[in-house]
Image (tube, rainbow, N blue to C red; front, side):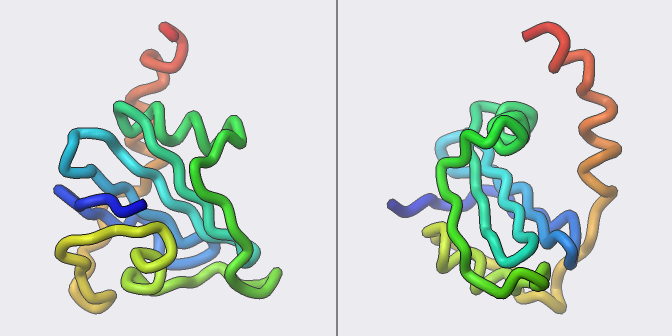
Length: 113
């Protein structure tokens, strides 16, 4: 399966490597790489995608590295999860605030569902 990218944000470089991706159809994908395992989940909002990963309901979960590995390039991740579109090169990434801060602002949303 392939997913077309609307917006792409890398929120952590390593241990874990993490990405927040808005898909062209409006859904969100949360991708997480830690301990050699790459996991990707999809939700109608970013919070739903993150919740799916925390609940272990991953759409994609695969061991692709060694148990002590937590770094992956953007292009390698995109190839594993089937992303198509403009994938920024790692050196072009502008790291935004950590997803934890974004999540903290949305905790009320978690309580309502």
